[in-house]
Amino acid sequence: MDLFIDKIASPIGEVRIISDGSKLVALDFEDYEERMQTLLERYYGDVALNTKKDMAGISSKMRAYFAGDLSAIDEIPVANEGSDFQKVVWRHLRKIPAGETWSYGQLAKSIGKPSASRAVGLANGSNPIAIVVPCHRVIGANGTLTGYGGGLERKKWLLEHEGALQRQLAL
Image (cartoon, rainbow, N blue to C red):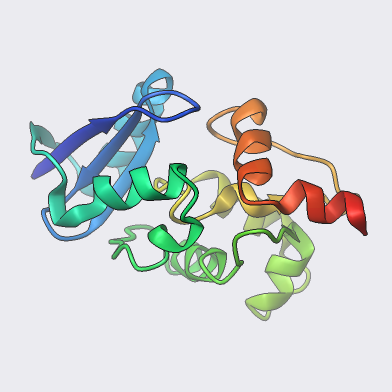
């Protein structure tokens, strides 16, 4: 399968943006390219990545997000490939507004499966579209920053960028 790749600079490292030409299929950081390749192969099989700048305006929207327009990523169309359960979790991740965090338990309740926190955590960790499908907005029930595929320092930066950590500290 032919997919397209663009690379942009960000305050937290180079970002790899993978698209089918109209929808975002993967987004990850340069130092996690092997993980991204594994997820692409899992969901799309054998893929060829062809360089193409600013596919469907996705790169421009990502730059706007990093520049402070947090809503710029809300309308990026995504193509989520995964199990039915993963797709439901990933759709609900997009319902978490910038500046807010949910626990895994809250996310599980939002999909109607309140006892599925661990399964939600696994689906969250398998998300191939970082930032746009905002898995970074999910934290531990006690407010701790738990695992993030791009590393906890990036998760912390993203939550600070979105104002979520400041809001949490104010509560």
